[in-house]
Length: 340
Ligand SMILES: Cc1ncc(COP(=O)(O)O)c(C=O)c1O
Image (tube, rainbow, N blue to C red; front, top):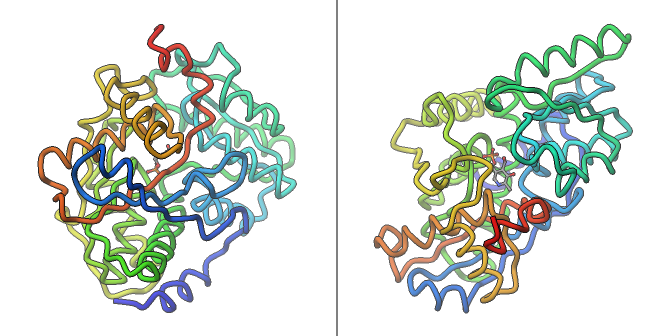
């Protein structure tokens, strides 16, 4: 186990660029707590991390783009669904650092409308190309093709969004847990559970931070997407590499990972779910805080369900991690108004 100071000092040895506004606020949600009728709910406002409307990618990009800068890249490459928050924040990071950004997005049901995140990618100066592949997982070839085009122009590309870069991104969330624990200590609160949306870096980072600091909270991940591979194995791969990178004496197993695809909704990734949209409205009308329909609304619907089932006890204290994503709201107006 490490102290917060030791964790920060080990992570400080890794390449990193400064992109965000930290610490983000943590706030008690009295009216949401009452409406849910379950645990006391606090919200960790990672929608306030800065970098083109904020979100969880800011913390991750400090390290993943840090790797690119370390490799002296002059072009950053990313790719995901067309309303990707990651691509929007990567575009912003590249702009801030004076680097070029090229993005490959999946041709999906939101590609046609240059709204929300796609509009922001363009405003931030990224060059966006759409690729006709069935899912994000098949984008790797396209990203490598972009990298090879960049090389043939005599430039040095760095593909930011690839699996081997995830442990670096997750470092941002080990630090977020340290930040959260200090804030909750200062409020005289203990944390029984943390709930947030995650499918790649955020939750492994939180699991790592929680265990290495000995906080003893339960970390619940609500998946936004169902991958073709086993998510526990993928998270354990990230955790094992974090252990190596930081040289800590710690082991993780499948019991350490709780991640559920149950709240994605019947239409799958990138589509709204009824429960997610209801949760989004509940948060907005009780606390004046805006979530997004694809990630954080669904995550709150998961928290509410876990509270109903008694998995989150009514005498417990839960931190809901707001991972951002709000610009996508403006690409989902019809769905949110119940017209689609
Ligand atoms: C708003 C939002 N929340 C959560 C996630 C999941 O984050 P991660 O892939 O790091 O687990 C994403 C990323 O896709 C996101 O954009």
